[in-house]
Length: 184
Image (cartoon, helix red, strand yellow):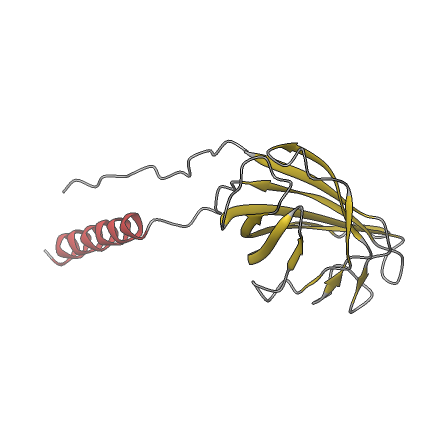
């Protein structure tokens, strides 16, 4: 019996555009604690410095943006010059529970369609928005957040179903052979 293993990996995509954002207001969460919150709201979401195809997007304040980590399509924002971003997946990428310095990071995947100031127009391009929030002082303290939006994004890796079936089949065949050997 031969068992073949395949290596599956996502191809690296070169970033065509990216833009940083900062919260120039006061972010809030429904529970007062960023580590237990089910709803996050930025204060004043501001697009700041763009690169490559987003280098011509001017500084602008989008306003408050709310999202719920348990609801994949809950984050959306737009402006005529930037375009529109709508989330399709919200994943927690890291958590720092250090008392008084807690932080949480999200990888928010979504679709981006460019606005009037983008160098090369795009439509429904997979995009990654990284959101980093921190709450110095612990629950009930003020929250700061910032991040970057980049496209195209490499989607999160998904296990290969064929590889899983192959491994399970090999394991079952091995158990059958062992059972026959023990019975004999």
